[in-house]
Image (cartoon, rainbow, N blue to C red):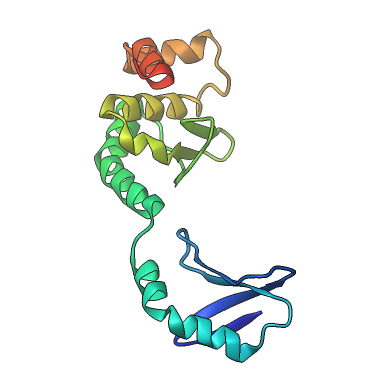
Length: 169
């Protein structure tokens, strides 16, 4: 259930638990309150009232993900146009998100490229390599010899860079 309390929209989740758990989602700022079954609306309002300063501070602070996205956007402002113009290729759309096992992905049919937010912490040559790699997939969907020749044309040191990214060497 959702309630408007103290100027906050609060998502209340009734559960078979003993305590009350208050959380502000760092991604979207949603205020969630997990409460035991049978908790009254007055008790919920009191919890939000007692923690209103804490809730407000959490909602105003940008999450680590938001900070990473902004850093990546800044870095990509010049890199994307540079590589698209240099390679004569253009992605239809770019998305930034946390990815567990990849640095990037490309859908050759739609031209959509997704880049891992963790790239924000790596040197520019790594970001350039991933951009060239993913843009190359617009021409070569797989990782065959032609694909790697195409990548090497623009990033001759791609093997060294990839080793660095995999092992931190």
